[in-house]
Length: 69
Image (cartoon, rainbow, N blue to C red; front, side, top):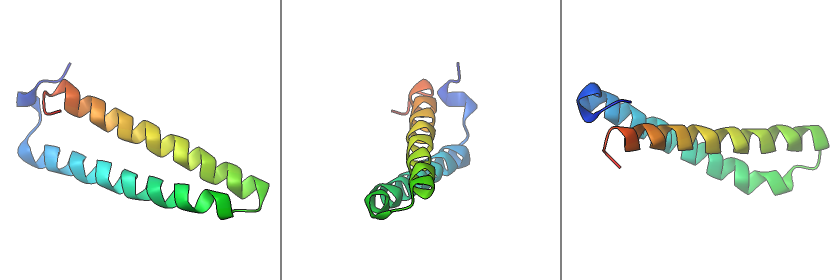
């Protein structure tokens, strides 16, 4: 388990930026998935949504383990 002392300030900042980038990407994918008519492309967008959810969850878990959240 990681504690607060194992993440430097710049690392916490970078992790926050990663979460924000994933959230922005997730929001865009969620807004466009219903507009996609090609089934294969729709599957790709849906997989992107699942992946972004997992990435955000993993980053948030890391923050929780450091005692930040």
